[in-house]
Image 1: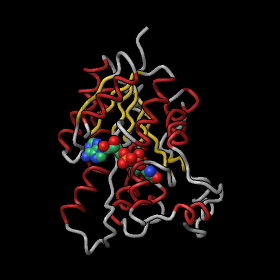
Image 2: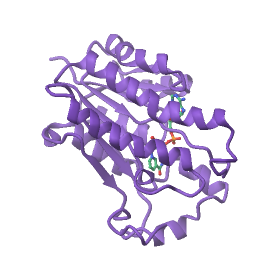
Image 3: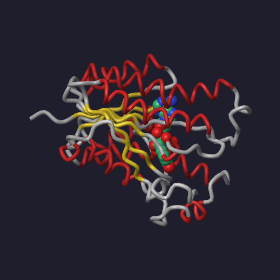
Length: 249
Ligand code: NAD
């Protein structure tokens, strides 16, 4: 019997790598798509035979558009797209202080390319496909000094809902909004002194930062049979931060 096949962007590290491992443990074959082609190759090899690496720079929207078809050709089929890759600016700049190129790069990777992959993925997968987009707690309230990141992540929620509303008989599309998760992205912010993990944990009702596996579990739920009627949803996996909005980080 042929296997269920998934494309995971930004799959070589952090949350994306956990998603790849979780999906493969559940019987999927994965295309690990990442700007870091060497790491993606190593990860695909670790996942085992049939899993593949695709090198892609999602700051190029045309390259993003081509990705679902590349994944289908490499895997033999495609049933799930996880738009996980996302970037931010760790330099601690306000929007007026940020150079326009950096601003545009964040918008392109986090939103334009996600939209392009959703559209191309729907064509490649047809009505039985599933798409899961990575939003963020920043989708609902801007994070300090991460304005463009927050704007794009708010955009992801509405893109997901708009597609679910417009696509009738087309793939189901939902989103997962992680709170702070201890990935390389967040470790980088901690190392730069931009995040104090103890202060962050105090603002989380659950009392701790999440792990990549928590997010991978939510993605697998939305992609699997238990999530069969989930469509246009954004699942917050944040230890209760959104529920306690106002308590803040
Ligand atoms: P990460 O930085 O740890 O890993 C991201 C992966 O994307 C890396 O493998 C990187 O090489 C790849 N990547 C970066 N730029 C790329 C590009 N231009 N083209 C292709 N691949 C590229 O990130 P993460 O923390 O695992 O976050 C994954 C997703 O979850 C992102 O969308 C992020 O916004 C979201 N998120 C993360 C957190 C968190 O606390 N870590 C919280 C909320 C939302």
